[in-house]
Length: 433
Figure 1 (tube, helix red, strand yellow):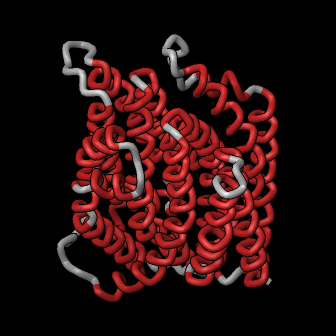
Figure 2 (cartoon, one colour; figure 1 turned 180 degrees about the vertical axis):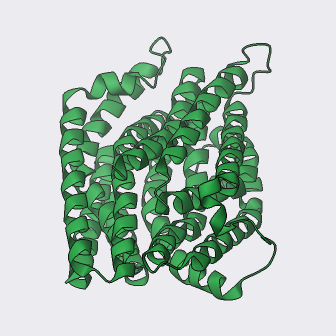
């Protein structure tokens, strides 16, 4: 039962991005391409900083396994400290994102709109990271229901603010992509307030004194969170960078292709978030058993998680291959002239997305299991080699020199994910034995 709310909250979190893509897609193709670029760039920067938040989950779970409640507070608090510092330090990247995108070969009009979007969402990075820390803390305490409900409330707010500000409804100004950015910040602030009040005021959690003397540094705990969290963030960068590089290369092919690419990735990411939820549950269970020193239960929990993830992957493949066109059509206003081309290209890409469902699920599950035993440094290198030395070169080679275009680009992603899945799962079972 631990995994069900985590799957729900992961899907709800992804729904925030999907609603942005769908509603901006109704607004126009160029704004959609800009939001695809801006949101994927935000995600890359977010992923690196979220390593500290994700490190909190196994550290808290292991501390609870040792019945060390003081360490629970120390680790979580320093995870919040590191997240806020990272959010502040990365603001200049968002502010000058336009010249960066132009240097990467993106269309000038798309880059200008993407910069407007990123200048707004950049101020939401620190709140978003602190929300992730609180989600990890509460999930490790098996308080997953509140994470789900707060995220669902955020989805509702995101839809309402998008409707008001993207299109200029209800008397609000028409802001296009900038309206989607304002909606994103609104949801992050709402989530932070909701989870912060719950973590600080719930009577059952007051014994952890999470925010008591919050301003006092704890350098030893900070080093521990940094040591475990930085490789997690860099692993996420390696994986996220694979997809960001694919978006940039798709932008070289064309705006219609980039818009279709963004839609297909959003759909694939929805099923991926189900694997993320199961992976997080596996991290918590494995970390708790690791803290207790129960290796038999640890291995059994890992086997159950892998079987569930495989079942989700098979169901996703069937869905993507059976009704790809109706799924892509949900993201488009079919009356617009460009929509037919995006629909056709997106349908083709979604068929290819079915190829990497199994590998994508296995690699994220392996990463979750390895975090449970607090093994993050070697997995970082395995992921970096798989994605950057194998996946990205294969994508470029198949897309451009061999002339397969967007289809070849996606086939290269499949190759990188397969290499990561195999090497990371081998690493976990070697340690588990």
